[in-house]
Image (cartoon, rainbow, N blue to C red):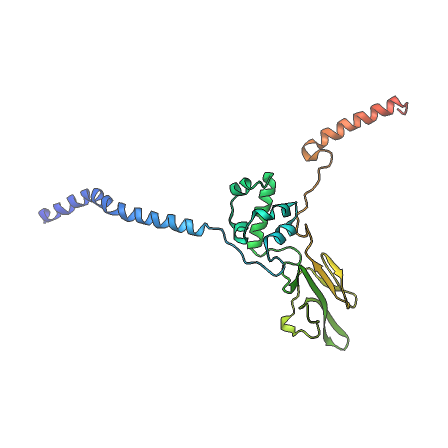
Length: 235
């Protein structure tokens, strides 16, 4: 029995060297597969265009901050959503905060987080029409909703399943649609037009030098004001 066990024990002692030579190729192959998978999954997702955002120029116009001037640098929609920060810098999109801003809005668009009017379905030459849909719940209750409808039709002639209720727009009073960038249109309708900076995240402005220098700036201003008052004999 002992003579039978000895080879087994010796085999166990020698196994790490042998198994390493066997496992190494399979590990290398697995590592290659992981690398290939990472490269594939790391490719940026290119979202489809929408009726309100049909091309590069419109997207850059909506997000504002002067990015519209760079529209010609992106030959295709795919290029807009696949170029990395270093490549954007080579294209001359400066300063860095502008590139970061563009990257943030690209990610928002991928996730379907649009600005005002982003979910409009019927848009023609950058203009969408909004009307009022009335639903009578009872003789004393009538609900009114803002809806987007095709340009060549009216709310009444459009089948209800085809009407779109955009976010951020509502009916004020009897028949006035109100919401971001909604303007009065013809025949009691309203229109929403693609406007530069419509989705722009407005940058705040510093008050008295911002949070870090505010106390210092206000202290020096107080000294200057008191000095001026003493010179005028008011103190």
